[in-house]
Length: 243
Image 1 (cartoon, one colour):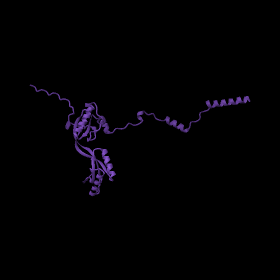
Image 2 (cartoon, one colour):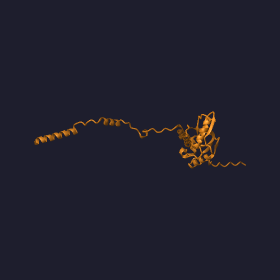
Image 3 (cartoon, rainbow, N blue to C red):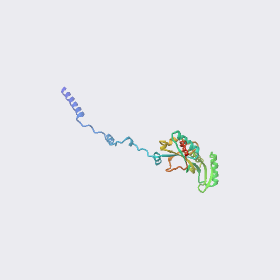
Image 4 (cartoon, rainbow, N blue to C red):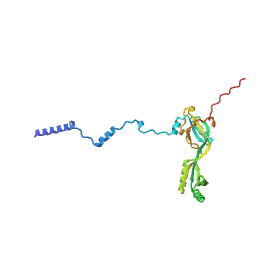
């Protein structure tokens, strides 16, 4: 009996040793094997290659490489003076340049395609009742019978008015109002200032001013229409006549 017990114990020990050191390991599950293979085949990329860098527009590229930028436009000289002072506080000198340009003076909110003048009169009365007191009739070959609600410099205000017109039961249209005017630009040279201002450096324009724009200076602006910088250098003393 004792011999049989020892024989069974020896058989168990031999079987355990065979499973530990002799028998091949069981195959891995198919899903796990596929995941490991997929990880092994993943390409190696640099961090900079993980996502493409955002592309810059041609206008932005022109500003990055420009030797001079123009800030404006300004209709009121006082607004140009305020921008000049802000640039000076930032360490940038500028020169003023006059130009004739078509500029956006606001956003026109209107109700077009009115069937008749009588219908336009009724529409105006209804718009006045909801607080849009600037509504008036405009008749012309280019606009037909139209109710003009107003021209607004602020795009958000124009959107609010257009919504009020829609709430009153009409279908509004909004478009930019352009006009050719004499405007002022402030030209800032990179070489003279050791750099150029950024758009965010300009802050918000004064109340009533046009929105700020920044563009590369004209290729050949010349001296015509240009006024000196706000703080020009003192001129050299004139030579005394001989005698």
